Length: 222
Image (cartoon, rainbow, N blue to C red; front, top):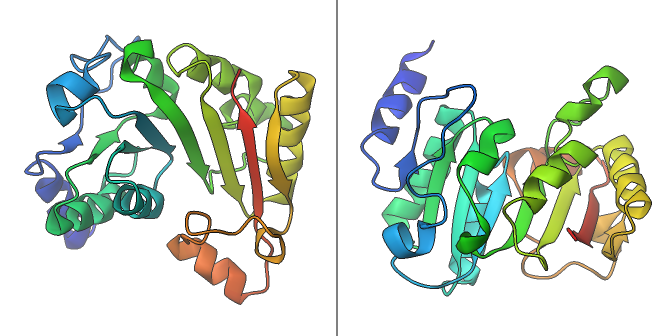
């Protein structure tokens, strides 16, 4: 492991808004489950989660646009989380937190009391093999997990460069009878682009420079 990664891992442990619980199976409920607003953010603002946040460009960008909301970036890669955590700390964005966990354990960290209104899934691993469908973050199994803790009116946002994942998710959403609020397989050629959807991740910029098209899907979780 490179020295830079080791340095970032060490610095993560000093950040007051980064949580790195020890992974156990089954995962016990976290002390902040159902208490993120009262015990950490110290307010009653609704919560948005960015799943598989990577460098957390959306957690950083959204928390700056919406200071009256709370945001948590979630990923297993500690060196990537470091970037978003350091940026928000340096900027004084106190409406952010970061959680280094495997997303399969997410139900141990949140409950209905946390008022989760939005889930952002930004450029997840598309898990293209059929045998790994259950690992897709928009699979029926994961959608059911999200329903166990998110608000009934929670909105899911998927932004991806994978057209097969986009098509798969749209099929799942329609099969479950969920409301599609927006859908396009070429976001930047659509009329959907606004201040929020203009936020770009590091890899998204690379894909766009290569001429790739970005897909976006927004739907109600229930």
